[in-house]
Image 1 (spheres, rainbow, N blue to C red):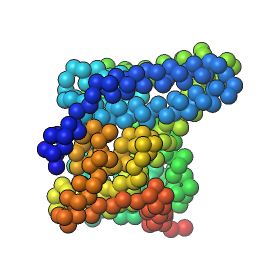
Image 2: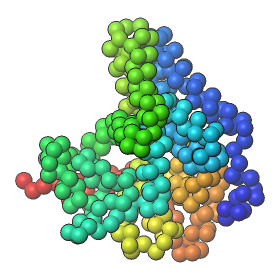
Image 3: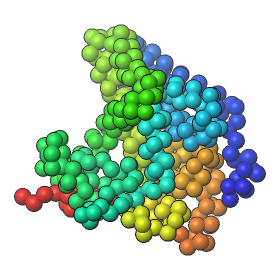
Image 4: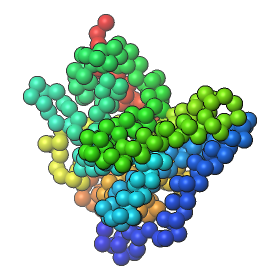
Length: 340
């Protein structure tokens, strides 16, 4: 199938598309800050524009880091990733380290010496905040025995479903902090500086350009971060949350792991744009370097191939997928809540 897709030209990203995406990287935040300076209703539109800019920029970084625009080791790709770190606030060093493991073992766990199931996939490893699956309740409970986890041990396990969307909204702040820490750890000083510069420059511009007091601009900038974080995290959870969380040693290989843990949601021009093509998550996991514009075109062939080989191919509506997510989180909350 990969050879067939290459022969059809699916693996090439035309220059016009690259130019348009790079223009969007610069034009969207510029427009947002212009709207902030206008004041009034325009300010609210500015929050939406900047909020949408963050997931769109994340999708661009995702594409470049997956070598969809050519090898990410090339100078051109490295420059793009640096610009994205400035525009986004988190960088590729942290992302590649975490995300490539996710692609290899989505929703996978290992069994620790005491029998606790511990995540391999970092996307479901987020104590003390969330228990992503009831099989991880014991793992999260261990993490909540000290520090911040202990302080939150009563509230979060019981109320993680109603708190889920507020937690998603602040995800960007955690991702940025993790990016800076990992970049410093790996001595990627320029990346760490650019991630930090995103926040410094954003607050400075917002404080200067706002028609009101500086703090109103700072609140505007934070609101855009919350909108962007919510959209991006919302898109991500639909693809894997509520799918099987399994012992990696019991999986039967790469395709089995993908089929167990990955689902698609509906495709349309608008949904493909909003989700950056990640609504075709199965195809993305099968062909990670395939440009996002082509993922939906691979659905029919991918489904036929997987089903012919005896693997699942799960597609749910957005409502059904979110219902599955919240149901799984609810089960996990009850499993993880300490006895009163």
